[in-house]
Length: 380
Image 1 (tube, rainbow, N blue to C red):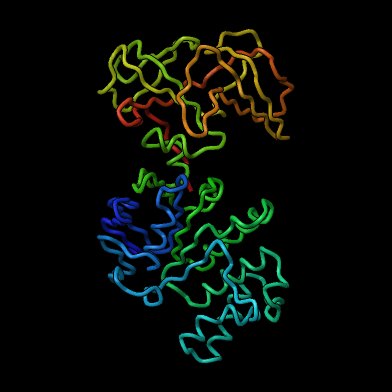
Image 2: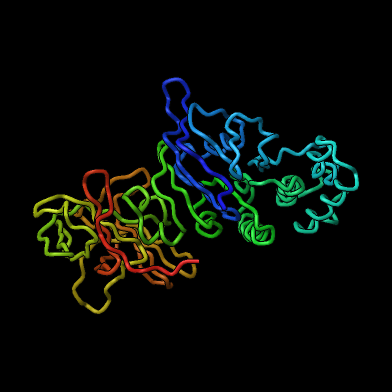
């Protein structure tokens, strides 16, 4: 059953078009995570669902009911914000039951709802405290508990973990995933954190400049991005993009090369647009590049400009000389290599790199559409 449906949502602020023809169907019980760069429209879209922002055109349906023009309190949603938005003079229990008191629900019902939410969130021993007596993680649990007590049709989360430190964010990711499994509720979650998106989502919605670029499960988007933007946005360290020339197209394969890069062959999903001599973009994720240590030939050579020793893994940033990387906001001009082991490499060391031929991507010059085939994936 469809719990939330967005039909051709447009939102304009004068001449600025913040959302452009958004279509999305969310099934009951899904955990949808919306990601994208700053200014892409993800928070604006969440606020239009909540009713905090009006839409210019389109329809918002919750459980089949058109709520496009309804007030936020009438939509059957509950929203958890980045800031905890707790009343400092109220106890935890009073904060969690506030929405039900405003709805004039019986005291016994409010107490039962608060006790249930506190038990789920493991804060039953905090109910008589006030917000200033709580840690950041506990305050966020109270804010989530306030949403739970309302038993909404849809939960909305607007970057709820961004104010927490790294350890608490990890803990709260686990707790939110467990909460979703226990409640079986429909949740729509906005974040800029890729790790949150990849670990919690049933499906990820990638937005860019007010448009949905792709919707799919985390592994589907990671393994089978529709275009260069999605491929570059998901993944840390990000995918390497190299400008290459098509040397030959034969059936479902293309051979490409570039100054500083030995010819490599890429399997194609639809070779139609490719022609010999065309300039395209070759993509390879850092974990699919290895360092040749036995003197064997590799695809390219370079000099290490930076080494990051992260304990269980090593990140290398390699200057490949004449090899031209495709610029992006987060690009450094280097080839990034992610090794899943502790490696004794050093600054200014020369290395030879090998690309995994089964893990190469090609992107067309017109809009960066993906034209390489991918292997089957195992998804949750």
